[in-house]
Image (cartoon, rainbow, N blue to C red; front, side):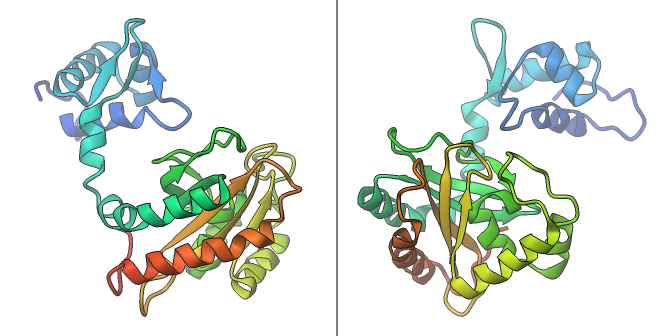
Length: 255
């Protein structure tokens, strides 16, 4: 792409990445001025880079002038190993769980201190949730995240529980209580939440592990009613999670 960085040490590639980094799950549609502000770049520079990204297909421009992520970036993103391996293997098992429960089903891996949602199947009659494929949500506030956190290295657990954000009034943020809950997740083999990420949503999740390996992902269900017995959903999830684990190559891990 054309253009020279005016600031010493700031490459054109860094500026392009800053433009793309302006978008996230909460800001998936931005005006040009918002892109410039969120990427920390002059409006003229942002305008030039956005125009080139649009021509390439990395960004799209709606009739109202608002920009969003383009299909070209989605195509590139699906080549990532976590997409190519895990999503392809897990897809039929997610469909089985969805057909059996008629609830929203999630597949996630750990990305730092967040649960990265690799895939999901949604039933229109179930709980309204914040997750979507590609979204990152706090580990401590979601069932799939708690499973991943319960099996994460000690430094990750310490970092996640240092100052956990309270997403809803029901989010558990007390480090001592979270430590006890993670120990229970490991003992029980499943995690549960009650309106911790989204009001009106309850969830349950189980770990996924390849042959001879540790936990690499988690599989969960979100329901819209506390009256549904989450415990009864665990065996359904475990059958699917075990099937996914068996299909993964030995030693597989997300990168």
